[in-house]
Image (cartoon, rainbow, N blue to C red; front, side, top):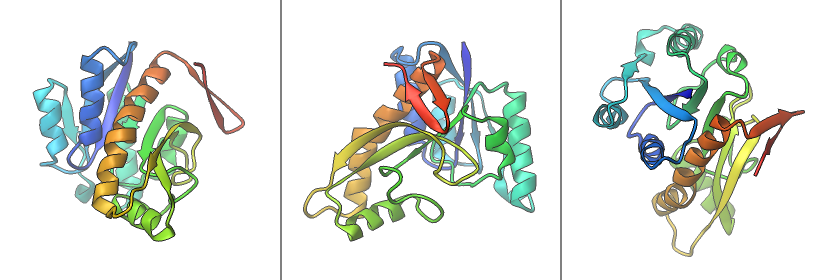
Amino acid sequence: MKNIVVLVSGGGTNLQALIDAEQRGEIPGGKITCVISSKPGAFALERAEKAGIPHRVVERKAYSDRESYSQAILEALNEEKADLVILAGFMIILDERVPKAYQNRMMNVHPALIPSFCGPGFYGLKVHEAALAAGVKLTGATVHFVSEVCDGGPIILQAAVPVKNGDTPETLQKRVMEEAEWKLLPKAAALFCQDRITVENGIARVEE
């Protein structure tokens, strides 16, 4: 059984999707063993508590710089014996030592079809604002392994979501979460826990 540690910063909707999927038996070979939040009081911690999942806070404000915070997160992941680390609305960009230590064992969901609308500065509603400003007809979500390059790691899964006339960033965000993010992230976790993802030359291949 692989230990899944989920990093969060806010409401934890993607965490809830993972919890629900695990409870339905959709992540065979894996178990969420810890939730780590970058700030106290995050609603995601309440979700973990309700599900009986151990949780802890490694507060960003308690550290003077990104390097010391990244080291603290790395130590916490090692203490929790993480086999898979999932960023689920984790709003902190860690330095390169963390993805290097957990190469191809740390995944993130991004609310766009990478390589569109990604990289530094593209997070939350900003992604959907950019998609609407560009006039794209399809957007979606991507689950990818985390590398030293922001949103640049190997792509595991993607799903397209239509952009509708009259969409606002908020309505588009909601549709992308419901139709793509909440489905892709548990599926990617399940694939990992069943050893069905291999990475060669920076390309992730999924065994169907």
